Picture 1 (cartoon, rainbow over the protein chains, first blue to last red):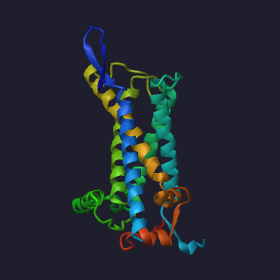
Picture 2: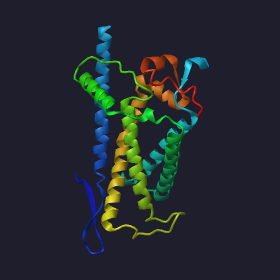
Picture 3: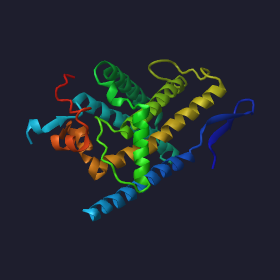
Length: 53
Length: 215
């Protein structure tokens, strides 16, 4: 997976074009991982609290 | 529910700002990422127009915040940050949940706001620099405005800001639909929370509603 995108300029040199769009799935995955972790953690915590009552 | 049991949390102008900003952000994300995912359409004009709208909104929000809103609601001191981080770490590690009553906003909400501010300002500054390269009502395109090296860096920062926005919006929407946070989502739609919600979640010595404010 690339981090950056490159292109060739008018002189054939490799120049930076931007961030690689492969990273889109890394950012989506990070958000999904956080959401899943938080949802499971909160669910277990709330279940534990109900059990204590 | 009577007016006396309602506590004003977000005034109409702030709610309008939030939802217009949301519309602009979603338009910007759809017009940038849909073409990358293979949905082809003429996205450039829609993208820069939404970007200009977002910049104008943010400009008015900053003006309003500095002149009329309480900036201390958005401040997190090092002591408050360390206390919140330590309590969260203890809790995640299996310790007792401490009911931390917050001011108007929790430490997490303030930090999220600052993260969004950083991302939006980065995207706005780099977006304006990129806009110089396309025709618009403001100027004729000037593709030589930046060196190749600067251009690459500007495109990287703009792209990273867009990618970060995707994660931030996903997490924001997740918290907005969580059952225990729905009273906050309602307040962003209707403007108020109940007195019971205020007393359950907030330290009233730090924030007791905006009812008396003339903003």
